[in-house]
Image 1 (tube, rainbow, N blue to C red):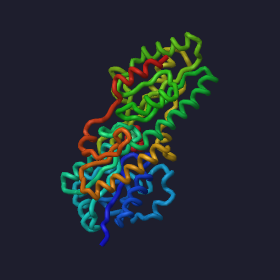
Image 2: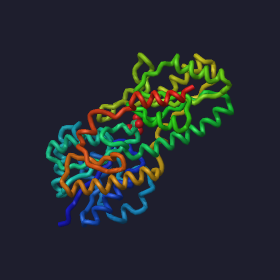
Image 3: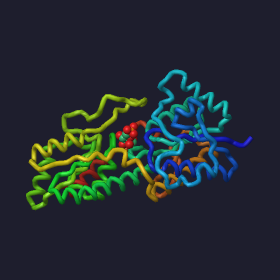
Length: 342
Ligand code: F6P
């Protein structure tokens, strides 16, 4: 029998997942290995829901956003019995091992599974770019470019109407997308979770800018930003990994700016637009290189490891190094960005 591996994509989707799947299938074919794709993240492994993947199934998927396998935020350790079901699936299908493509939660589960004797290699993904032990995750570059283009578009309408435009950008615990799209798009103020928002200071910056003749301002806000002495703004729903759903801070900040400055203010929430559509060249290439390397780690038996970008090289690091602590924006980087505020 040919050697057989499984692949799954878990957590929030992001552009670049399909290039990873394609690269794993194509690299595996070179050695004559079979690949099974599990549907909807860990859920597919628990339920034994899979589809065989070959050259034809991955043809044409390189430029497509999302994931042909589907995804979910299922935690295989949440419901009793799921872990046994997952192990049964792997045994029944006589799988050599699994490649898990995901962010902190999916890889955190992968790491726990390795301790349970399951053979897993990880591939890091998240548009938030907040995973440790890799310089970048794919999906992030696409999200930054989309957000930058939106900021460019908001500039022309802000300028025509003499308005303040607040744009809420994804980033749960780390403000990477807001910071770098804000820098690239020339936002006048950027607010991120790493630095609690001083609303008086923000309004002062905007007033100063308008006093020197500017008639509009763009404020980029990460969804996880917090006002000083206030909680993060979220609804009550939790996912299986215990994360709250964020959203709403842009409106709160927009209302405060309008009230305190008297300038007409509008709020735009970019939401899932940032995760949709075609990956950039950077993300297609990173996903491709990650997929090839992940298969090679499987062959080397490096379970409990994940692929990682370090400088220009793709290397293997322990999954443990990536999960547990998030990679947030360093204070010096944010201070540098502040030069351009106001
Ligand atoms: O983790 C990626 C991410 O896009 C975050 O930026 C965002 O907070 C979250 O996922 C949204 O999750 P969902 O797609 O489940 O609404």
